[in-house]
Image 1 (cartoon, one colour):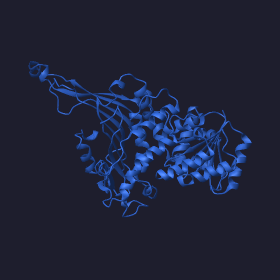
Image 2 (image 1 turned 90 degrees about the vertical axis):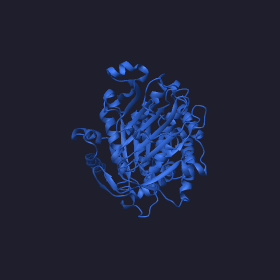
Image 3 (image 1 turned 45 degrees about the horizontal axis):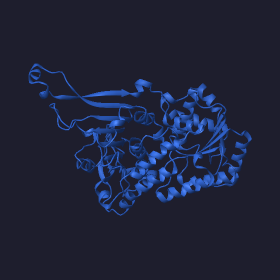
Image 4 (image 1 turned 120 degrees about the vertical axis):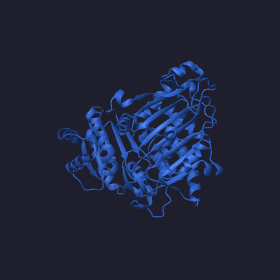
Length: 490
């Protein structure tokens, strides 16, 4: 199958940090279909050879295992071309169209790795130059808008020129092997399904923590914040994967229908719940990685009086028969105590204790997403008893926590398909399972928007927390009101 992958923003940060390394890995693994061509698009006046040298120089900045040898890059570079396009000039799109029509590939992928404000312009110009044919697929990067109205406006424009099954709204978290294993855990095994409900689960915690600050992305982050950057997309997609009902099959729309039901079942916000169950924070200076680090307001490109949140913790519920009354906690932030993405399913304690166990000890399932990829099942077992304990009998013997640990990297190898590699291959093959449908995205924005509106009228601003900690103390107080604590505090 021949394909042309047109990369708008072909000289940009995302292209060389994520997309080109992912495409090279697919090429190295032999999974990139033969007969392909990768066309970088940008405003720079570059020849094909200059573009290839630029991309090769960027590979020096990716991790060592993913760098090509000179011979490997020479073969990969044969796929690379460059077309100069000013995104606002119709004549430049005509030149791109001539290049694509001359080859007549089976599939044409338009990857729009630009600022969201340019999405509508690109789609309009593609249509005007005849590049919205049935064999065209459009990939849109997040964030898709900054609120519900802007998201709807972008989706409305895109749908004027492309069918829904031609649009691939990418959330790279859904391409992570650990997230795909989450679906396999839930729907490929009979072990947990009878327990996956309110009668057996006390609470579920989703944590996406980063130990880095905003680095050089201060100006971008000022207009985004943690709620838009992480909660509206990544965290809610994980919540859907945990909370959704089993789909009728593995087809894309069957899966996305069930995720949409979860989003529509999220408990609506009230003024009281917005003040009690949503915590926003901003990192101050502190210690991280063994050294002193600046606070958010001291970062380049950040307003010294900024109220942009770098941390969000919240409590919500899914109002349906399976989950009614079970609290779901979401927490994400920058400059936290570690880089850790995990889902913790805390089961209820046994209804009647016959062993002498420590108060509060119960089973839990930990789904590790990063940096470790795997599952931990925490159980209780009788440890090595001494003679005194043996005389006391089993009712007086204490149980100790034990852990079953499945490390997916050790079991399946660490060189598994990466997130962007998987998603790019799915786009080329036309598989929509791991991409977000427009109604899902709009429902997520609808649920998030009351928080944005509440903060806009809140004079208090975000709570400050020291870099290298787990965020504001109010986050721990919020979960403690239900009698629980965050997993790293247990």
